[in-house]
Length: 151
Image (cartoon, rainbow, N blue to C red; front, side, top):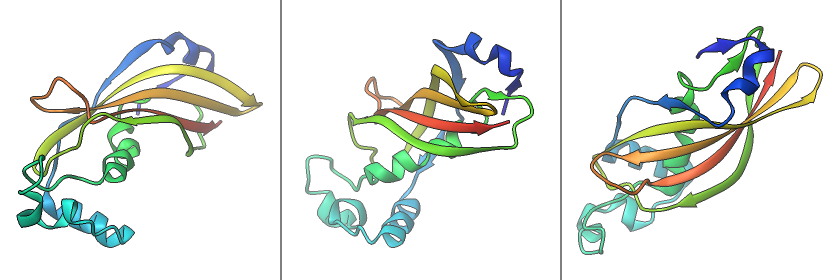
């Protein structure tokens, strides 16, 4: 993660911070997410039945693709120097645009949209996270994750 002096955090607002590496969403990852959450809807875990849908294959759970934000963002998000810890503070909004089909490659584009000092030593960073699908003009989703930084 790139670190900058706290006084410089706001200099990055409105700027694209970068894109993650591509990550393949395979059936094993989808099945493990189904197991972890108990969401075994056929569109995710039954390739034969899913092939008969308009998608033509299984698709990743929307919340699976959303849960990748912290991992895909870890080398991109600008953080304050002297950081003691950063925690997920939630999301301001999420819009699922299109599903992620099995074996698709995805990557996250991150723009910093707001920096707010919540209280001394606590900085709230709001980003716009767009999950791009290789070969597609439309993203899987656009979300606004919030990260609370303690310095």
